[in-house]
Length: 256
View (cartoon, rainbow, N blue to C red):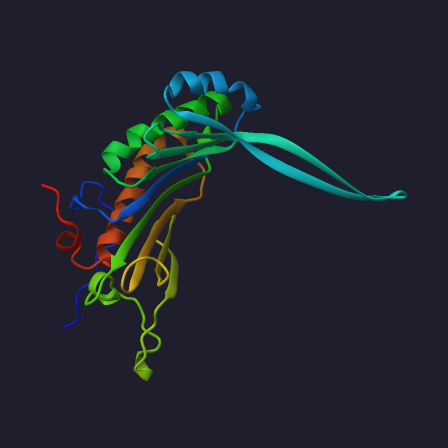
C-alpha cells in the first residue's frame, strides 16, 4: 500500500521535535523593503553602536568601475561607495547585514533554535526600519543549511529521502551530486527551494551531505503582517526538513 503524502496544510501550532544535536550550520532570516526616505548609511553608525554594544561593526563597500571611450583613448574610473554595514556579535554566532533596502541576519552553528535566534535578529530589523521608514515589505526569507558528515556504513539513503542514484543501473556509486527542487507551496505564494548535495572532498569517510532549505515570499505585505508570515515560513522550513531527513530524532537526538 502506498504511503499517504505528507499534509501540505500550514499549521503554525504544529510542533516539531527539538533536536539536541541539530546538523544546522547556518540559519538566515531576511526582511526586504523599499525605503520611503533617503537612507544615509554613513549616519547610521552611532545608532548601531548604541544598539549593538560589544558587536563588531564593519562598513560594507561597493566598488563601481566606469569605462568610457574618448578621443584620448579608453578611460577607467573607480569609485568606492559604502553600501551598508556588517555587524557581528562578540561570540561570532550572529552576523547581520544592514543595507538601504533590507536586512539579512544569520545564526551560525551551534544552532540553539528559532526562539533563541529571532530575538537576536530583531534589533537589526529595528535599525533598518528606523533609518528607511518603509511602509511595506517586498520580500521575506527563511533559510536553513545543514551539514551531515557520512561515515562507513551510513550512506546517503541512511539520512535522506528521495535522492536519485543515477549510476545504480550500472552498479556504480556516485561520490558527489547536486539536486535542486524549486516549487511553489500548494495554495500559497511561498517559494520553496530544496538543495541536496554531497561533497566528497570534505572530511569524512564518504563525504559530507548538505541540505539547504530556502523559503521565500516575494510579494508586497504590510509591516504588521510579517511576523505571522515568518511563523508560516518557519513551519514550512521544518516541514521540509523532517519530511526529507530520515529518523532525525534517532540520528541527532531529541531535546527533552
